[in-house]
Image (cartoon, rainbow, N blue to C red):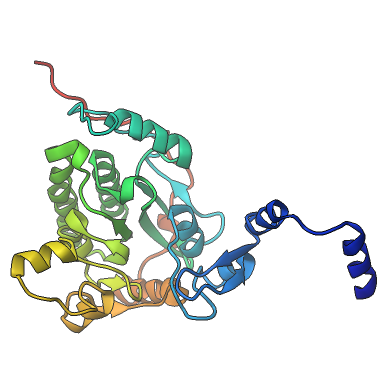
Length: 309
């Protein structure tokens, strides 16, 4: 069909309605960069690791996409998929915590804010945890803490490097002290992993804040961050009100933290897999794909319930 015939057929079909235009744009073929507003073909954007081809803005990605970007095809084995939280404090805000959990689980098809598993990264066996900001802001509750702890303990037994992709608003307030205790639990598992002379690499993405920053995000042997990621403990406004002074414009950015020694390197997403593989090869040259199991037992549900009175 010639270009003239195509225009002729479009003219016969009549003008395109606004609803039809919106449907065509919303079908996932195109994506608009939130930084520069440039429209990009989604297939090209995914090929570039969801980094804008025009302005290099790192578009936020979630756990499934992260796993696809980092793990070699057909090598990912998810673990502890069946762990789920309960409502031990019977927390009530605008709606019960149990209802919020159920609604979020149904919407995202995830049971909580992290996916964990083992797989091969550029043929190297690794234990990988990926936080998902869509699930209640990536907040760290009892299930996030339990899954990451089990992942680290498994990596220690099988002598694997651990990588955790951090993306979180901090501890989950709906679980109170049960959430805060996960900071110490994960940190203890990491200390045993370190004592076994094994490598731990956290990757700080936008945003990494609160109790995650105050614990496992900052305990890495080498701490990596994505460009322009927001990294901090308390919010900017809280810090300014406490110190009673104006903070720099780039405060709590990855670049600011690199300058002040809180992170070791800023790695563009397009170079992340290559960089992680290089670091693992340098620090664990004896790592072999034979460490990777071919079969895993069924995951067991995990929940915390309040003690009986």
